[in-house]
Image (tube, rainbow, N blue to C red; front, side, top):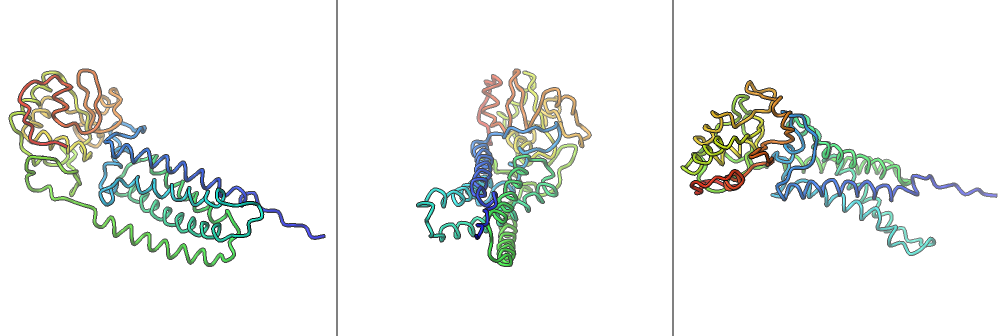
Length: 327
């Protein structure tokens, strides 16, 4: 009597588990995509003065080809979800001997998992050594990608292990070279010259910020900007910032050098970065600041860069409104 060899449980459940993890990854990156496209700030826990997921999403590495990086992650996870479930959904019956679809999707799952793991590894390097921030969404995505790779390898009986290593080597090299090529062309505009009136471009730092004031402001103020700054002083508005925050510098550029000097001189600006000699970390903790910049005007909180027209509206400003810059 010949005893049939039982199928390991992981081989039975590998595809549903892969689909579940890919679904979680899609939810994670889909949420970040929506927040990025709508200008929102993702919910995250961060200490005052410390970089967080908000700063990661505003970094130059968070956008590829003009689109949020999270969008490409969402598409990748969705593709893995479809590949994992396709044979289960399309299988005609238990006696179906056509294994072409199953074999093809396993190889595509392997290629996708390798590429996603290599790319996520590079993003973890950027997170640790370039951006110097803690982003639980990013770390979760990296763990999802690694889990997909492990499950793809152990989730079936591969006939040729050597072919797996060869595929991993080729796909890994192509992915890494492509990643380096994409980020080698990250747009780095020149902010050394004065910026003409109009829409402020995304600020990509070219130099390290000065702990006392961040980066130099190279926009000039008009009568409207100066009048609004004086009004914000009068109504007791507060702006919570970190000197290393690119978005905070964008807010400064909207005001211009002269108007923002009024804000700085009259204690509207509250520095939250502990490394700054001007830090007032306790005030930031007391205000429960989660991201930068954050405005508190008339008891209400406004997160992110605010157009001056919006600041005028929420603060009750009624003076000149011909502001020179906008986001």
